[in-house]
Structures are given as C-alpha cells and as structure tokens.
Image 1: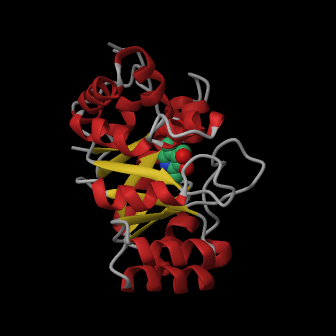
Image 2: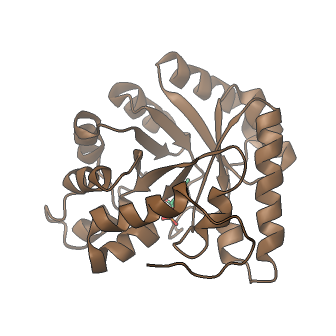
Length: 249
Ligand code: PXP
C-alpha cells in the first residue's frame, strides 16, 4: 500500500503573493498530518518563490511524520540540507523560468558529481531520492549513484491524452519494476490528481506518492485536512481496473 507525501509549496505561494505571514505553511503541515499525510514535502527553490528558509527550519521542528526536502543539486542547497537534516532529500532539476519542475533529473549526464552529493547527504544521515523519468538508462544511473530511492516523474502520464495514458502507465509500471530489480525503492509524483492517481497508486512496489497542487486546490473547497483524507483514501485503496473514471468525492 502506497503512502502519501503532501507537498505544501502552494500554501507558501499564496503567502508570497502578498509577502505577508499568512497562510503559514507550517500550520498547514499540521493539518495535512491530521488528515493522514505520511510525509510533508517542500521544495526550497533557488529563487525562494514560495517556500522560505525559515519554513524549512520550522518544519524540521514541527513535522511529526517525515520531512522531504526537494532541492536542486547545488552547493548552497547541500549546505542547507546538511544543517537542517530533513528525513529525505529529493534531488530535482530546476530552471529559474519554469512554472513547476519540468521533467526528471539527468542523472546519467552528471553521475560523478551526483555520486559525491548523494554520498555526503547519506553520510549526514539523510535519505536521498532522485526524481527521474521512468527510463532504464536513468534508473541504472540512479542505482550507480548510490541513492536508495527514486521518484518516478508522473507528469507525462498526467498530461497524456486518454489514448496515450495507458502507455504512459505501462512505462511507469515497467520503470517501477526495473528500479526495484536494481535494488532501488520507488516513489512517484507530479501532476497527480484525484482523477488520475489510482492506477499509479496501484503499481506494484509503489511506496509513496508526492502530491501537491490538486490537494491544495481541493482544500479551497473542503479544507486541507479533509482534502488530504480524501486523497489518502484513493492512494491506500486504489481501484485496479484500467478505466480512468472519476471517483472524485
Ligand atoms: N514531486 C516533485 C519532484 C515535484 O517537483 C512536485 C512539484 O513540486 C511534486 C512531486 C508535486 O507535484 P504536484 O504539485 O503537481 O502534485
């Protein structure tokens, strides 16, 4: 059964729209945990467009589930991670001009430098996950980097037409199989919604799904605690049939 990591970047997005103190992602993390979040995920971006250093520091003290810090593979972020010590670091590609993370990390193209970073983070007692596309060469490079986890990029699946979606789901299923046969543990995320999450949650070996936008959007209607509760029910008890009909509450 997959667990649910809740990405609360969008709570900080609303705060930063006015550069004020509310809504505070730290208190919303607590609500997410009350709704059943198994982990809290934040992305500290180089441009600090949403999550701030202060948020990560406070969350380290308040999160009672697991704190997963998404970050770029830079010296600045490495120093922050080693000081704050989240439970997990997920390394993601980052471009200043992007609206959100686009595509997976090119692990194969920077294997030697990533090996060093992964080793230093793990020596610091932090689990490391690499956000990658479900491609065999990238997954092999992930295993070679020494990281124990991968997060399969589900954005292409999420954006695919209904005709293409089964093919993208098959790619993710195969990616999960390849990763596990290389000794890696498997998470997934990006672009998942109440409508498309169940087939991904049902993939064999899937350990955790990281989901943000759709939960925060639903929270506007029902509150964050309830929105997380509804997503957790889908993640824990997905239908296994291939029809992507909505079971949205
Ligand atoms: N996983 C990773 C690596 C991400 O970068 C993001 C977006 O910050 C997510 C999961 C969550 O994506 P979404 O907000 O589309 O659910």
